[in-house]
Image (cartoon, rainbow, N blue to C red; front, top):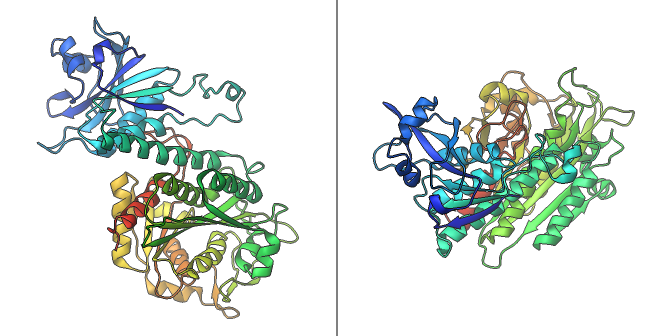
Length: 508
């Protein structure tokens, strides 16, 4: 992974492969952002004009390369767009810095060292730029021949080192910002690795083993329930979904505790390591990316480990509901009735609505511990993608204030989200003549119906939120900002921020 350093060195004398500067979009053309003063001075204050001549406008995501001026030890200047010039005295938005750093880091694959001379106005900017670099430099090449040499698909290794110019190496606050960026980004990138792994290698058993190894490394408690333990415990939802596969299901409980903690958060993740749809088989063209259906569990796993690495004063329990949804003679059938861990019965009308079944068991297990709040994360419904597109996740909750708090936390860390309702009139559509509830309801508002189903399995009096990350969890298009093609690690940073806010007593 790319090494992050803080540097007080002047840009001209720094030995590096490139100097990264910011350029913003002004009313009359590109504007050189703070941090690039030395570069601008070397161009006699005419750098903005040079960039405009080269076609740069300062738009977000734009990247322009030009030779470094005489006297610089670095041979290259990389100007990256920051978007619109901020309002007077407002400073540059953290997300704009994060995206710009990500674009530059990806473009500098193959470089040994780059100096980032972006606007560094405090620890928030340090953290944002650091995260952008580490997330933008990510590449998944395990299954490529070049991976033997730690190279990315274009034959170039990720950027080896990024020096943040203007950072203070001896300043405790700046050092803490870098340490946080490293911990969160490393775990988020680990979640991306898991999402990108092919399903023949990432089975529920393998995922559970990965969690066990991480628990040992970071001092977490871990409990793994295999199919025998799940049967003994009566986890009918997880067993029903996983019953059609030779790769048997697992329920993993990861526990991080802090001696000074006063609050307890539970995170629950959907971990369908491959989703064929089961007997209700998905149509052609909808199976190829279904390895990503465990993105919720990957996010929960990463967030719990990150909380431990950051030493947050909050207890965090992560529940990973892991199963493979396959059709076979032992698979659950449309019309079957499952008795869930909570004791409720569910009529299965569609075996491709399986995520809510494994989550239901995990939600009830989490509820029995009476946490202060539960947040579940899942690639749950195509309906949410129709509603919010491919880059925004939906937030539902049984408490309006908590829903707002989760939404605000997501926005704060740069993860696009949108609050969604849970209309009670949609609950009637899940009434069953043979069971307590059916796993399907009205087609319109399907994402909200799924949320209402999950709500049935949250313990009474427990604050709960549901994040449907079906859209942003897996990027099938080209890379953008600090987001790569493939697994994205969506919701990891939101969960970590919720844990931080809870530790600080700022989340109710």
